[in-house]
Amino acid sequence: MIDKKSAGHYFSFNDTISYLTDFWRNQRIPTTITWRKRMTNREQVDLIYDAVKKINQAYEYWCAKNGVTLYEMQLYYIIKESGKESMTQKNLSEKLDAPKTSVNSIIKKQIEKGFVKMETNPLDRREKMLSLTQKGKDWAEKLVLPLFEFEENAVSSLKERNLQIAAKCQNEFADSLLAQIKQMTDGDL
Image (cartoon, rainbow, N blue to C red):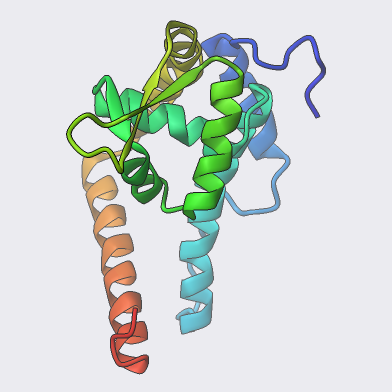
C-alpha cells in the first residue's frame, strides 16, 4: 500500500534496490533452482512461468511505489523507449498487447491528468496520434528512466551466455506453444 506522501514521487536508486531486495527476500518463489531428478513437463512449464512471474512482480512493485498501474507505466515506457515524439493509438495498443478499450481508458485518464495529448493524424484522419505534454515528459523521465537503469544494472549482473540461453529458451518455448495452439485450432488465431 502506498501512502499519499509517497504516491507519484521518485525514489532514489538505493531506496528502490533496498525495497526490491526486501521484497524478494519475502517471496515464496525460489531464487535459486536446485536440480534433482528429471523434472516433469508440468514442472518445467511452471519453472518458466515462475521466472516470468518474478519479473512481472518487480515491475508491479515499481508501479505500486510510484502510484501507477502496470499499463500506465508501460504507456510511458513504450513512448520513452521509442524515442519518437508521438505514436498512433493503434500502435500503442499493439505494443501493449492490450484491448483497445483498455488502452483508450488509460489514455483518457492520462489526458485528464495533463500528461498526454491526442490529435488527429494529418496523414490519416482516422488515426489518433498520442504525444506527451511537457508535464508528461517530466513524469515519464521520473517514472521510466530509473527503471531503464534498474533493468540495465540487472542485465549487467548476469553472464552474457546465461542471458542468451534464457532468452533463447523462452523464445523457443513461446514459438512452440503458439505453433501447438495454432495446429490444434487449425490456425484460427
